[in-house]
Length: 265
Ligand code: V07
Image 1 (tube, protein in one colour):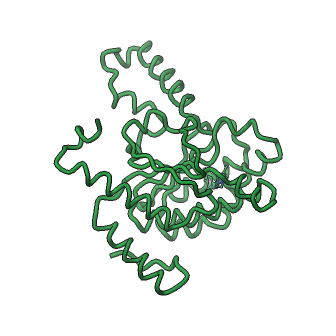
Image 2 (cartoon, rainbow, N blue to C red; image 1 turned 135 degrees about the vertical axis):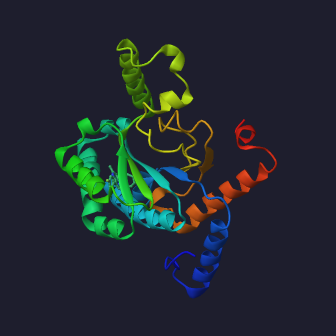
């Protein structure tokens, strides 16, 4: 039984939503959900606010969705927070974004710890400002023993850069005779990626109506179910995550009769 969620404003709504959550929990849940959190700038523009106001509001959505994902027993939630392309944005905006992990964890880390959430990150940490690195590393350290949801942030992450980096390490292992070319398989290669300890995403969500992958987890999403919505990330609510998971369950149930491997083709 799950803890009754107090996420909905009226008792009627709360009853319906709790029933939906109960029904979801009766069927196989996506183990790993990944989200491209797009539309923060557009959300702000619509309200004549600066773009950074959209990023700030988007951070509140991260908190909400993390809590629901944890309640739904999702094992891993990977959030695309900052791409290798995002450095091209105005310096002011980049500086603001790089302050968000610290702000988020400053107010939310105690709750994450309380809820048994484990924080991890993928991406190139070498270019991150000191304060960002310190805040993230501190959260990773303080939650490393936690066994609930793995909240995995993609920060300064790029799918191609990840693959190139994996190939460099793999090539070095071959050169040093730690590996032979015929030993290179899917699962061998996966161990060179930053996601080595994670399962591949079962469900990828992208908000804000764009139908692109934008260099996100290119290798890992080979068999992933994709779910797109026009809703802008700051407006993304518990209802939308529930909808996406329901759609996932309907799709995977339709494979009925086929085995796992066949259903992937
Ligand atoms: C960021 C808010 C969400 C919408 C997308 C862009 C802006 C949370 C984090 C974060 C990252 C690491 C961590 C804890 C929190 C974050 C960035 C941007 C760069 F350990 N939200 N958020 N990081 N946005």
